[in-house]
Image (tube, rainbow, N blue to C red; front, side):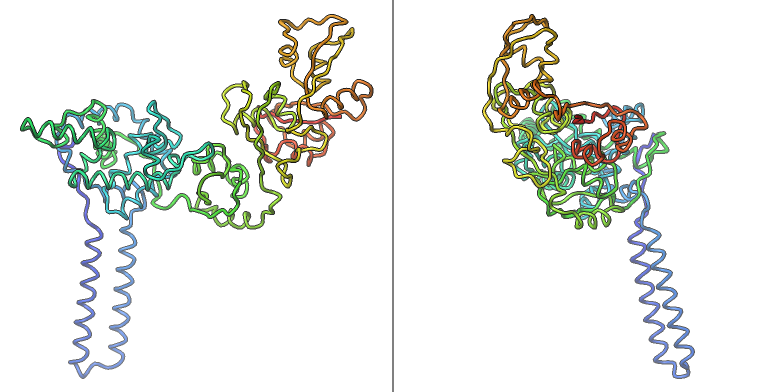
Length: 526
């Protein structure tokens, strides 16, 4: 067990001393050259070359002192180690982390995308680099983390505090999940707390967890009782009593991981991402991932604030891996306006179902649920849905001309059941759901009898299409759902169903070129 923190050499200070020695050495040589009249031009040249070689050596030596690993850079900037000493509360938390090494290891793996940015922002403000470990305590470096108190993101801002620090929160964008915006907001908040509590970082950290009011009242109580008012002696909530020791324990593990048997994943001391300006107001993150030639999930991990994976209501920039930023920028500049995703807001009407709307707009139910954050297929009248539109279409136009306008009023008609009819064949014939037919007619089971009259609802174009279909089946399209299997490709599926690949891509605009087993595709077959 370490009883005192491990110290590292101040390499920057050594470099400054070395530079000063070179300057003195150069001045000495210059003085000698003015007093010694016997020096010839050859000797002056030799001295100049020697000085250049010394300067080059110093520059190379200084470059070598720059930490190659982010953990080493953090150790050089630790400032809270004197606060640890032999403290049972810190030791208890350290033992817990040592007994569960996967906690720090998994957090460091997730944080590898973001931690360099956090460290740089802390250094710019001359703040302790132990604070780069705060997201490990708060969220395990998970930008999607959500707590019972509705705190969100790496830094776990609650809604009110997030708004106070200008973190915008809408249906499309949540700044508390924005990597750069939330980091800068958190550091602003910590700096304010640090100043509020007279430069005491432990009290500032306690206030970050429990609120400045809670810490201030605890200090006032101890003052009245004549008790110490430092963090370790305040009567704070149990969570806050463990909060600061957790951070200090983590910093000890990072300071000497080998001593505690912890395996820290190496993280290069270089930026993982760049901020790239995006002028397009509506860009699908999966589309952006294709432009950058990266996985769609990685693009979302870097830009988690866009809740529906669409760049709406947020800043006009994206975080892109550094080695892909140039390629992304070039491909983005080549994009034509009609290639961008457009969106339509659809208000749910009486009789609508998720399957019916998905069929009408040629998207999958899964897509609609993901985009609109739906956990079930249940819809309520008046609810607004965001629906991806075919590029180039105006919002008031249908995606395809043979589909009824979303704003057209529903039409009710009667159907007399004939021998051979079933709920499934009628639902397919009228392009509605079986459960809707049952709801419209108060049917408890699936049994129909010949001569029974059923009420059916739908837009004019749907009814006309269905009526025509009963007289003439030629030219009518049916919706088919296909689940992608291992080894499938768009080309193979198009060939299997005898459709053109461009149509398959148009019917499934979010599928991309890389299909995944289990993914559902929509096909419209004659």
